[in-house]
View 1 (tube, rainbow over the protein chains, first blue to last red):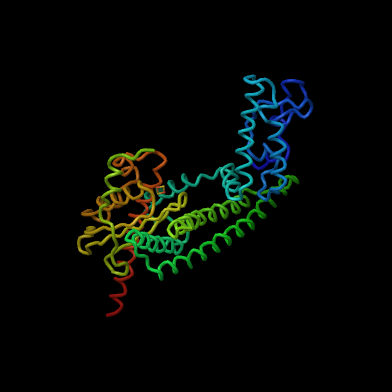
View 2: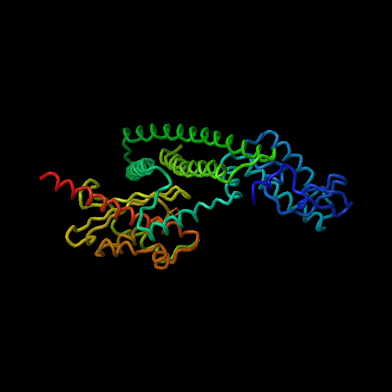
Length: 250
Length: 137
Ligand code: FES
């Protein structure tokens, strides 16, 4: 999908008429008669009538979510087993998915990147193939010192696990790992802050697009790549925080 | 998801786990990661300078069973090969040998990356040491 197709309202071809009263409808139910509509294949942003921007007012999103779940609730919509109720079920489950993804900053960003055609695994695989053909070393997507750090901390965790198994844990090691845990959590926070900076950059592009100003592929790619890079780094940190917490038992 | 017998075997009895002296001149070290899942793998080789044959290989992987099995297998495969032969190992060879399912292909990619990166590290050491030795005279 190209950026030109990103609009706050569903594009005309996505808007259809209500099956019941013939008025124009939104993607979930008819504005005129309130009947639930068959699910339209729209992305989560469109489902909520949002542009593809990353700064989302979550309070507002929640409000829309509750209102929509009420309106789309299968029990409210027609007889059990009817077609309308079936649609209602499908729309409700789509609503839940959309809400779950959009309200979470990381999931939202990952989702947007996927909509933008970013395939992390594919990229990694083709980079390896490239390295094979050219004989050049594949560039690791995260800085080497981060890998180094991840590896070292994992070694320490393994040691602590082994000690625990023997029933004798070394207080100094526990303290050291506890200290690293705090550092990791700070790092994690810092990454989120950094991510929000890129959100701003991205949203500014969308705003320009909505104002019908030109946005080059290169501009989009730049912000996109920064976000990909950041999410990649975050995956390592997230795993470490998880593992450290598990070993420390909290 | 079920693991193949070969994966389970490597997972339970990993070959060549350990490490070698990273600063040693005949040792090449590759440390790589799979950002999709946050797993890391270290693979080291010790190369005979006269024959270019990889005489020893060690690995340590923090990751899923398939990554452990892939790296374990990788160390077995590179041992006894020359550096150039080792560079012909492709991740899909590992996938086939271990019958990895599509979702685990990236784990084998990691192993191929590790081999290449270890060899590159070793090659770099050879380049940097030779001219220095000449200059020193
Ligand atoms: S799941 Fe990440 S290397 Fe296997």
